[in-house]
Length: 320
Ligand SMILES: [Zn+2]
Image (cartoon, rainbow, N blue to C red; front, top):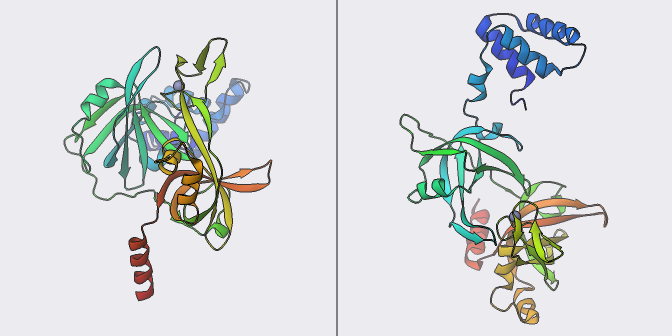
């Protein structure tokens, strides 16, 4: 519930009331004793702030920098510059149809994905351009595949190019290029490797809205978020990638898997012969598979390495 950290609250009380931090901490300790330990120190700090007439609400509603946004926050306000705009996707379930829009925003501290579910807000961003500035209010933050995301629902608001606000510098939370032998668990990375083994795809039934796996209940498919839906088939593709330093098992889903299965999904042998031995750039995240005692790579983006670009990169590294 408390969005402000204990230290932030003390800082705020100290600066507005000109009281030493030590004195504030003493008051907080006394409050905890008075309430017979029935309250957390953050809770007690809120009470003390209130007793001293310090308005925490005001900073609770201040804009957060992108690197201050952690997953699991409600009513997040932030400002960012648009760096990518993805195509708006449509979906339909048995109970509703709608659209979802995704954009990437950045400030001087980092970047994140913004997912917009609200129809009015999606209409509002029809003419959004890269480098526009957006001011977001009342969003909620989530974690998805190791990346943080801000989601905008019906209670959220978005303003494009609010007057008087500019962002000069931006920092893109870039992925580090790594060799497979250097990969650690739970990190985002980009690897360049060859597909040395490709396994036959498996499919699962997923919600067309949120892409979560759905269960069959008596006579219909049920998504825990979206109720009764008609599922879509989502492919899972497992492979081994080798970059000369080591190899790693990797997995990709839906659109990334479809990129590989693409032209000939019905004849897997053709896909296999066209894919094996080719070089790919893979962005994703490593994860420990405890059962098999190995590190695996979950691919968020797979792209065939363009030989021309590879050559250019090699030449430029030779010139250094
Ligand atoms: Zn769903």
